[in-house]
Image (tube, rainbow, N blue to C red; front, top):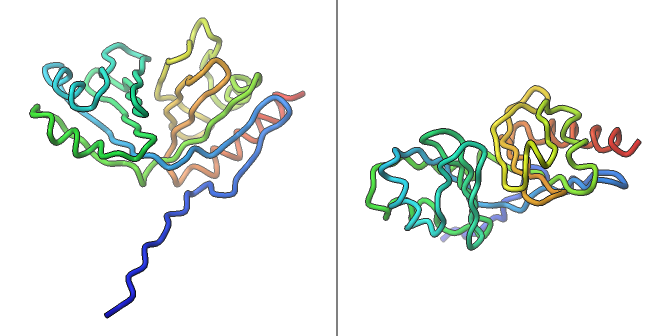
Length: 184
């Protein structure tokens, strides 16, 4: 019988580190991610089984018990479970019509934190990231340089940049350059 070994999955940004005196760039830990589509009539049922209230307004998010839901569009959410729990199984038991796709292996994230985090992001992102325009908890799909990202304002000086794994090194490099410029 063949020896069955379980391989540890190495993240695309394993070993990457960067930043400056005013900003830190940290690859996020692996997490479960789901792209969720559902009509307004399914929101209550999904919210109940997921253990958090799905946000229904643009640029908003909700978090509970290690899970976060980002409002992406009128019928679209991006779900993250930091503990790696079974988001797909929870969606499946909701009893409501929806579409859920596990995108855990497609995406990765970079945490940008420190007093120059917004300036670092603005090196390649055209959004106004001031607290007045993009408060803590705000989330949006936008561009960063030449790629699409989901940008989440997690804490006053902390942002989460979600991107496709194939663009992760590009995003990290652009953020590293932005961090250097933000320190000047």
